[in-house]
Image 1 (cartoon, helix red, strand yellow):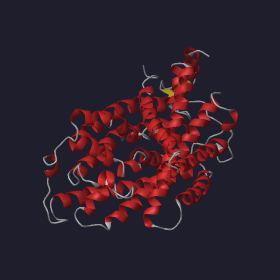
Image 2: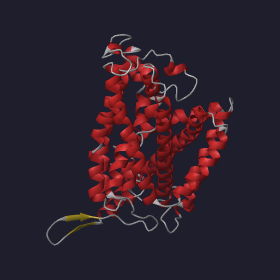
Image 3: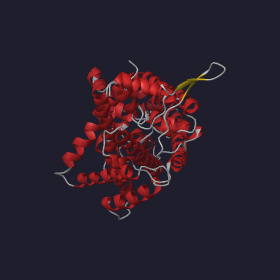
Image 4: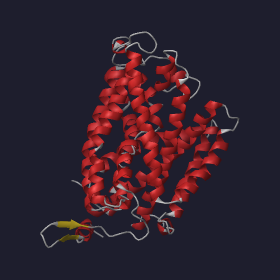
Length: 410
């Protein structure tokens, strides 16, 4: 079917009321349920992008680009993201569909492009869930529980699968509270960073010392360009708002409100977070790259250990664990709904379109969760190379996804 005919099919759901107002409705997908309330979408918009990489991965970006370089890179990517999300928000409110922009690409550009971008987007979330299941084991072993990483994977694999079978309303409720915890934790760090920088905690007034010594850039312009893919990967999850439009109770009102909060997310969570981080940790701190554990490499942990507040490491580790619960929960949701959307268009096996009475695409969800077992590849030095390739390609898939959202608009 040509793109023009697909566009006509979409526009035929636009009607005019007696008072002259235009109302737009999308064909309801009988398998899914509209169970996401306005407060769910708002917290998804605010907290959905705060993943484990925010608390741990920022150390890599800081050591590569330096404090000013990190701020510049995230600002540039943030501006691009804001523009893209405004476009996606308009489409999500106008034609709320499960599958989001992959449906829009097929509808307004070409089904072949929709096929390619749909599977690219699914691969993005498959890579994320593999990485997060691996990181989950690493974070839990920080407390030396005696349970191996593969044991934690088996435990939480079953728990996440059981929880996601409860339906989209349970997903929204869980993400609401997890996002609230993450936001409160970040605000608490902002306060602690001010106290550390002013010398209230630690006794030494730091101010903007680290912008002069060791300096604002770690590797000049080259360092800034090195972390563009990293920055794009950290912002991944923002487009989740567009995908949830198909299961929102009132997408025409809730989606635009959620999208408008993207700017405050970028400024308040990322740019302010990076600023406070860079005034408390220098980019040449050896623990950023050579610490013995993943948690110890977190710049948030380093900020506390540098001033003697080592107990903060356990608090940060608990927060990182919460972000991983949220990341895996969100990855299962987005990945399964993307696969469902592809099957709905005939671009994936029809079995992935089957849903239970709660509106859960069962086979899509189980298949997506099974992908998480590939995280076990990282337990072997040889197979770990494959794991690294998969995770690295996820960042590239993020950039392709980001740019592809422009297609339906232009």
